[in-house]
View: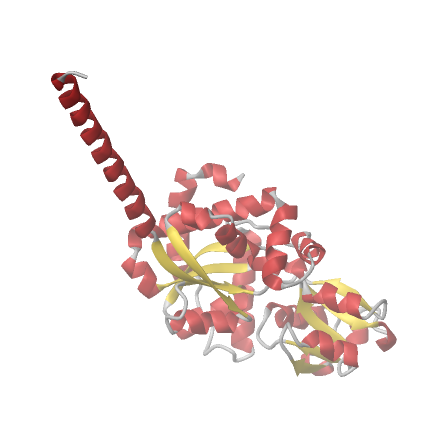
Length: 335
């Protein structure tokens, strides 16, 4: 190799090496630039898009380094967001309305799921409950201030029974099944997958009296803390787009999504598949959801679980704004 050729080759090698160094630095910066997030995820199948989206790398694709914080209830989600222990989470319609009424520092930006038929009333067969009228005088396990509690009230009203015609036993979704199994209550107003798990555990001694989909909206709202939103205002549309893509992935890959969510819930995939039959991972607020939100607010005010009636429109401003933006930019995610 001549001197000139050696010098030319040397310059080319130097430029190539520099280029590789720049590319490598850019790649490292890209990884470091991911926004760290603590994501409070409830251990219910309705929030499957959250966990599945993290596991499938969808949130990472949009620039987020997500740590999942498992939570048991919507109340815990509210507390975690308010205390700064979580940046994002999801709340059922009821717990979110309570948060709005009490001024907690977070806002809703999307629906994470819908499906009131994920709620239902499971009864012991030996209690001879064959219709809503037969609930009179019975002990019913139900979590106070939740969609099943609201649905139960409406079922009793339709059956011509006063509110105090049943004995409500306060419970949570995780322990009410054992109450029914032991005979401490004759019925439970709960949600999937706990309804199916309890029914299977009772081996033919319990059955679903009815589903609550015509009374209440299931699923709930995706929430972001005001502190995180203020620190990352330009990333909010990306968060919502990532959620929408995660929901779409669940819609299109239900069997694999059920297996991933089952790992999180520590149940068999078929149990999650049961929940998927009564849930839709649709991010938009429709007319039924709007009416259900208002009905829920009125119910919570009547039960004195919030200080008084509230107007919902101001609490949906950010959701409507970001929905419009993401819908215009990513219409394909709604398919």
